Length: 187
Image 1 (tube, rainbow, N blue to C red):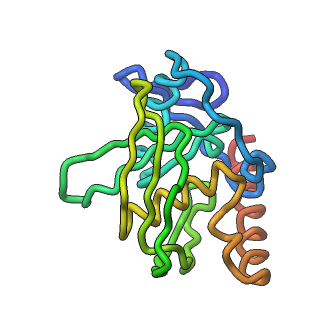
Image 2 (tube, rainbow, N blue to C red; image 1 turned 90 degrees about the vertical axis):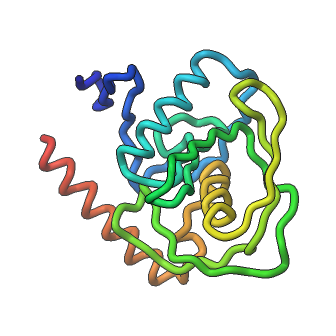
Image 3 (cartoon, one colour; image 1 turned 45 degrees about the vertical axis):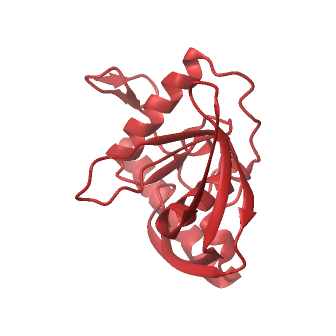
């Protein structure tokens, strides 16, 4: 069922929210921490997971669905494995390795665009759980890349900000054109 504002309600009651497309000024803002774990935050987490899986993607940050708060969802489980959904509230990187890794990154807010981005190979992250507890983990590989990418969103940074200006401008122009085409198709 379609909800006003373009969001879809799933049979489980979770809402698939519209994903903001770059350039959108909300994607360039640093967002505020979650002050309290409320039912609204729990619903947002459920909606973000549903939106992430529907897209499909492996990570999603609050600002990408116009929720201007420090919450991310991730699932870096192998495609043939069981889902491993994670919700990280107020995540922060508390340690980064000196060793670097390069991954080809994409973004749900920059559809069908990919580029190599170099980031620390391992990170340790601390966050609050949906139950209000403290959690931390040290990740390498895809998990490390994904969590850094999503935390960047909370700080108003996109993966294209790591690219050379010409490449970044080319991708931005393509996104402006995509947004125009989508607006025409809807209007």
